[in-house]
Amino acid sequence: MNTAELLVKCLENEGVEYIFGLPGEENLDVLHALRRSRIQFITTRHEQGAAFMADVYGRLTGKAGVCLSTLGPGATNLMTGVADANLDGAPLVAITGQVGTDRMHIESHQYLDLVAMFSPVTKWNAQIVRPSITPEIVRKAFKIAQNEKPGAVHIDVPENIAAMEAEGYPLKPSPPEKTYASFQSILKAAELINAAENPLILVGNGAIRAHAAAALTHFAEKLNIPVANTFMGKGVIPYQHSLALWTVGLQQRDYISCGFDHADLVIAVGYDLIEYSPKSWNPDGRLPIIHIAATHAEIDSSYIPVVEVVGDISDSLYEILKRADRQDKPTPYAVQLRQDIVADYYQYAQDEGFPVKPQKLIYDLRQVMAPEDIVISDVGAHKMWIARHYHCDLPNTCIISNGFAAMGIAVPGAMAAKLVYPQRHVVAVTGDGGFMMNFQELETALRMGTNFTTIIFNDGGYGLIEWKQQRYFGESAYVHFGNPDFVKLAESMGLKGYRIEDTADFIPTLKTALAQEVPTIIDVPVDYSENLRFNQRLGELSCDT
Image (cartoon, rainbow, N blue to C red; front, side, top):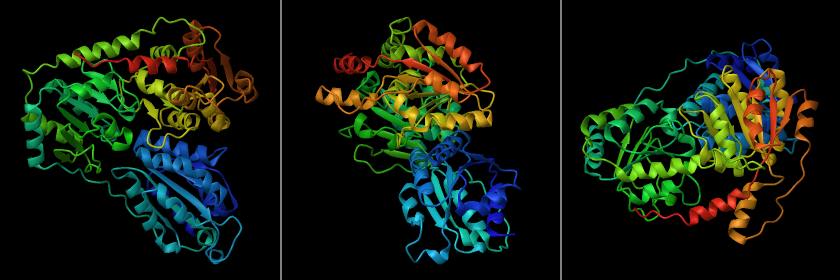
């Protein structure tokens, strides 16, 4: 047995199902070992796509997704997806090939110090410098990647070490034990909630990672406290629930901003500052905050909790609930606020204008998708509309790159989602700019039999940047480009392609696309003049009662 074979045995021991990546000279021994493994190696068309697949796999399963590249440009291509996973709290293990240890002290073909390079975008990384340490490095990598807060780790494998004879055996995984909050913090949190007149719950992705949706919904119902979610906290409370105030996180003020203006206590549950800066909702630090999470709060001048309830989130919520009582304290302002938010959402339900308004497109998408179906959002102007208008009944049914906000994630991410949940409908929503960054992974999807649908918001430019240029300067520059015929492109790849020519055709076309046995593309001309109208409406927003 050589080191590469021992490495693969250790990966099997960690329960790895898939490795996404590209073959290269410096990972030949690892690839050869995988031929005799139960792990399925999925050959992608670009290392960035491989990393995004591992990223979304980790986020959906809670188990580290694994991606593999060779050295040099292969490794640098992984970086964007690795950084995205790290900032968004998705467990990921990146493995890179490397030159032999006998070549690292001199200038060498394609050699980069990958341990140094990956260090800023990972929780931990290491190079296997002796065959015997392989089991320890793999076990540590998965433990760190999957422990709260999850993130990315990196293992570098020199080619001469990979080929060396190795002795050893995989180390038994040890799942982390639950931790429980202190009695003092629970009691203080309950006292603050009892005294508050207008408390507001802000829920983030940590609550999804902790599987705390049921506990959070029960907590909110019993205490009659409205709930706002971050982009990554969608579905923790069903969007049709009377206490759901939907999504916070846009850079400009929105209806939900009024909720924070009127709040006298914010209960942050599983909230991570990177999801939505507290300077946007608590700029002067006036709001008292209860921090309920599995880890302590990050330091920020706008986020100084009065109490930190650190431990298992569901347990903390139930323990606080035993000691809190708000049965006689209605929340009339929150009731009115929800009515305003819902009315804004439904005003485009019957809009038949063409090109399609983004609000209408997302509204219709929601009507077709079942509660358990999954939407993967790319990054661009459409992401802002999805964040604001695509609402969820269940956690992890709308995946948004938020902390790193990486364009190109939607298509590879959708393929990973379809691997995890083959019986669910999966839709990648992307702009034409983001689509062209990783559309080649549709060939990977076809080869793997993952039949999801990609909806392209087609405006012939980088819409989000144009939105910001128009907002700040009143004009735009350097954002427009041409596109291929997306229908013909789909057909040339063996896929099905559709183009929307009338707004009323979108829903039946989407239903047809989702029923196909191959990946599909829907090209939708979109009316992004709505972006500036949106800015104008919010600029006129008043929070007066």
